Image 1 (cartoon, one colour):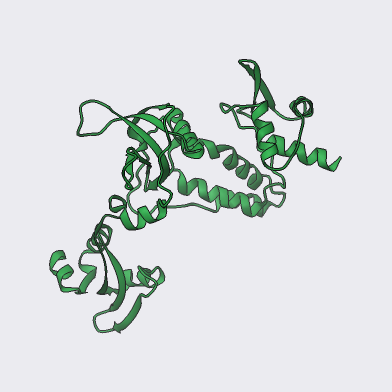
Image 2 (cartoon, rainbow, N blue to C red):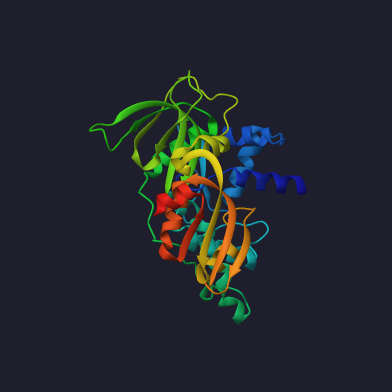
Length: 325
């Protein structure tokens, strides 16, 4: 009885929410890959029983049934969502709403709704008011993510997960027409509100290309070899080579010393720019703090320093002091 129940829970976990679909044979393959041996007849019987207990249903595509959770189906949590987890989801929704693409937010919508249901349904009156006691405020100017076609996102993520080559139609601002690229996707990067696809377009290079997801106009799976060098690391690419993301102006790190007025200096002291950041001295007569730290040579650093105007003064290096005026 226990093994049957666990097997059926595993079956439910393999079924996607509408519009996703998974065939009976694919469910069986996934179960067997995880060590659960099951016959086709047993699986079909389990699915029929589960469809009478949960909001799942099948659609005949070709000669096989493809299963899915109905779009309006409530979240089924085992174990149930705690108040602490619900609060984390509630805060995440507020924080991510202007960062994640709309289709990514939609994928999490049922988790967010379940969190609100848990918070509102707490028996104690004080606990039920949690939802009115938390708000997240973004730093800087609020911007919304560019629109990305959900079907394109699904195809790209599927190709990435299954390591398959795709043919994409890509629009670049400097070109009048779309251009086709044969891409082997190796990763995705989110920077602020924009998601980028990282992929190799040539078999003879060790350096990938970067495509903004919202500029991909079409995706098609193709029967071509998947090309990704064994030594490739997405993390290394972003941190060491991905200058377009770091806005790195050189590979060097340098020691930065600056004077900052009392107000913003408190924030910098609480949230340092580097792990070796230290306070050299407090200048009480000037109401300024002398900081020293090791930082990377990036455009973001310059933008951050300029944002404080006269509240910050670069002491060294002299070349940066001259550059910022």
